Image 1: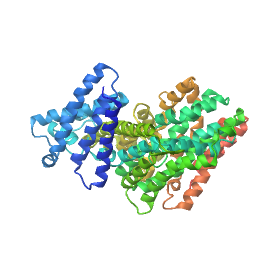
Image 2: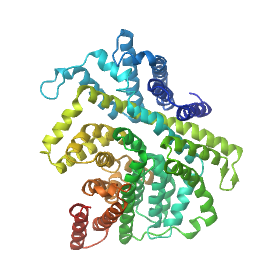
Image 3: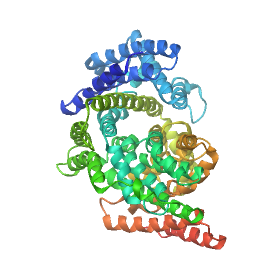
Image 4: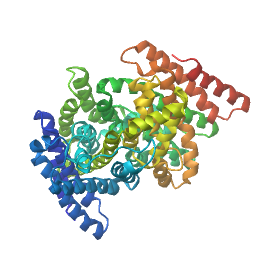
Length: 586
């Protein structure tokens, strides 16, 4: 197994490659995208290997994958002239190796469910002509089917992979730079200062720190594992019930995937699928994200009425000097990022690239001055390994999801499922939304959020659009509901991690998490019932009015679910809250 220095160096090869793409001008897609996969292969097949068998097969897959991806990149010009049709027998083998490599990358990175969905899609594409009735398809020549998926830009080298190459990878590098320095401590200090002294202060610190950290990590599990190591012991030491402590961290951490700017890579995929500028999506997503964390905050306050939830002691809170210094480690790069996007109006990836250089310079400093040589080396190692590993994991997910999207486009299955949703809902919007929500929940239970969103929006998006939803409403709704499984049993990843960290029964943690995370269930519906909520860019005053109304509704609903009220008072609060969301739409 190569040493950590090798992996750190290889990670920097990936960092340099992706940054070079931003500054070097146009590079053909059939060059940049296969090279992106080539750089991900060793991480997916060798780095995460746990047994000798996995390692040996990992080397084989890596060598085969490198041979085929480099072949595609080298022959990009001539392949463009084939228009997605395989004309030589040896190219069929190259296509087969590429598809198997993508499936195995995803299986090793995130488990069986997503590759299984992709395998079913491939089987449908190859044999769907034998299915009788409406859900069969006329059949596609093998050379055309495999060629579209592997040597053209309609499958694994499609626009989703383009998002992974040119945008997601850059923001992953940005996050790795921030996390290697003292930005995380800055998030924790600002949270302690803002909420530590309040009722239920330790839990509220978890909410704020998770919102801030999640805005760059975009991963619920990474969020729980990082901020949870600090907030969970703090809550349990102050006498918080373990189930409440675990639920608070799980719910707060899940919000990282809906909190701009990163949004778990979803925002960048949304840009590509909708054609809406990134800045507009970020503006639309900010109020719903704030409302989500507001609902969690209110839920904690309601639990404070049940239990004696203590504040964080004064001696554990940072001094103003410490706060100012540590906050600068994330405020300077964030400030440069926002300036680049909203000042000169650079692209998000170019703005992030500039911010990366500022974050890299800050690695030379800590809260006491200059970093020691050993500390600096450790930080550089952390950047290389974490950036390379995270880029590879997201590439594995997006490449595998691209197989599904490619098959849907080739066979026309997406159009048929759209027709099924419309007919099943009898042409009415809310039944169609309910069907879509159920599909998102089921798919999200086993498939990562971004992949679940991509697959669901591919089949349900056109139906929702035909029934009157704007593109932004439909995409945000589906993206939020793809997140449900992070806290909803039977598969609730962030709950499992948090429950394990506090050593509590996961079902108890999940029950409280669903009450604290009620916003995750209601806010997507509120976006449909109140379109102005996501119109901050075009109608700011209406958006603010809508956000305030829904904030009041979430307050009433959270108190009704959690606070120790009598049944009549609960019913009144719940009824008024639901009325504000659905009956008094703005």
